[in-house]
Length: 622
Image (cartoon, helix red, strand yellow):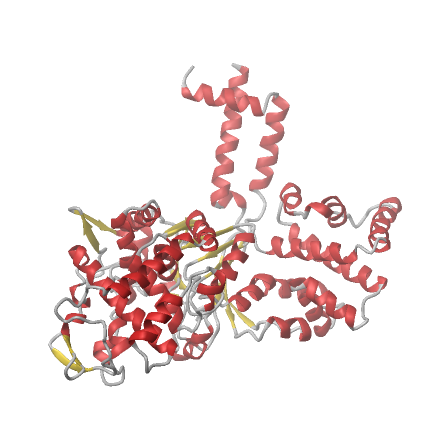
């Protein structure tokens, strides 16, 4: 028996009769001709939990659109807003309405029928089987019955469905039933969520975002440079650990380290108090971890000449006598000159107390169970890039040289460029988790290298720390990889897409990492529509810079559209005053025909299943 016959024999165990095979072929063919599920793309969340939580709940404004479409002739704008808030935050809104004395059996009956109608509309693009799998277990049968009510049902069926509702209310089970319905509505509105990097840093609650993503029914992640930095720290790379700690002190978000991940900063603060006694403890800790970082970076750079980052070896160029430093032949005045642990004879060597501090921090990162849980999820759901339904998703860049050709770096006499480079980087990130020391070091390069596909920037942490940026603009300016000069050219985007075997006219690069400065006239859609940059400054710290508060790209069966979000007030304001995020919608691309499951990636898999089943039918006859 050959391999094909063995496979068909195993398949026949699942489908033992001709009728079972035919039934499955009929079912799969029907699925192929349903509209494709709706995908949402978001990037650069940067710890902004409340805004992200709201956008997940309002499905980037899709819920409000559907409510308006269905109920605009029956509900006032205020009533529509209240219904939307109830869907977003059902438990909290119910508690508020109860305190206000606004809940009655009539209210439950009216509201539940509205939610059932909305769920029915949203479920229409899925098979009944898929909807059943999405139903909350406690109410699966009841909801299945009610959302599949037919308009022309006879009186007995109408009475049957009315009695279901009566019984729910009699048993005072309306709250739980309502909460189950709103959960189903949100799940049906978004079939799949893509997060294109940078969940961590800047904002205070990346841990809560991770918890929310872990509860999502269907999600993938393309790692960002901030994510990989945390992953490197969790793998035990001391340079990544120092950077993560330094960043969180800089952004004022130390609580995520101490309260959420159990990373103790006591040794660091005690060390900082001893060596910087006349300095505010936060500033002293920041200075102390910065020097530890620059020493560790120097050691790493010397271990890896292939990184070609010798220009980052700046500690040796400091002149302590007059607080100056020489950078590329230019003498620059530093804004501070307190380097009590710096030995100019061996500037990259840690003193014993610094070694104790970093070893303690590394141990805490490695042993944090809550951090491990989140990092495991990043590894499970994440990758350097993803090809999905004809689109190429990645956070940073595909490195290019000055002429616009693929560029990269050499490891062990092998040059990696283009897709091969991103595959190599993906493999290295996974090897770091297994304890490979070279790969652990490479995690730092992915954060900092101008030829890193996650960074693409010449990061100048030292200069930004010790130089006055207004006086030394050239020295503190972080040059970018030529990718960011060429990615607005359709020719270059097509070259990149072809490198990843994407040749269709409706293929796009979907990119994060670099905020779109809308108030300066920058546009998210570039290269004649081949590139879409969806970093709209989700992080609150960027709102004044970008002029907006993030994007969601939506890809449904009708095409692509971009939702541009305004800043979010608060969850409390949403619950109490039905405040929503204002989002403007922009059409990116309208499909010439409705995109069906058969046109999507999972449609290709289903078509292969059908072909196998057809072959099984013939094999059974022979």
